[in-house]
Amino acid sequence: IQEDTFFVYKFIRDWMPKLKDTELRVMLVVFEKTINCGKKRDWISHRQFVSATKERGADQKYCSRQVSRAITTLISVHGLLEAETERGRLLTTPQARMKNYGKIYYRLSSKVIPTFSYDIALPALNKATV
Image (cartoon, rainbow, N blue to C red; front, side, top):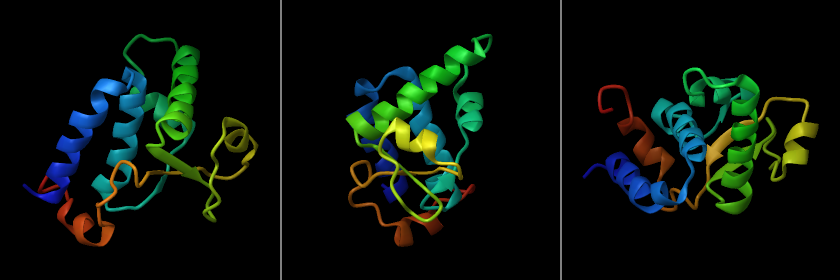
């Protein structure tokens, strides 16, 4: 099994049963924008999260609140995501993220991928293998 396939399998097996729908969708957005694109982290706006996770016909404000809650839970409760400033300062609370006037970068935490080597695995993750 390739390392990227093993990661996806392990994540689904270990975390999917524990996450709410929006939390899982947020994780998949971060996975797609980072690991799948060969990046350690990526700037993802709140609007991008809402757009990518919104169910057809759902209320925009409701979805926005759900995404905010999901990000907070994934960072503070589960420890699966990390949010940081452009300079790498961690934004661990909703208040810190709201006070940040720059872009917020997201990445999967080492709890999700403790043995995942970006240097080894990223070249293997390209559109041809997905």
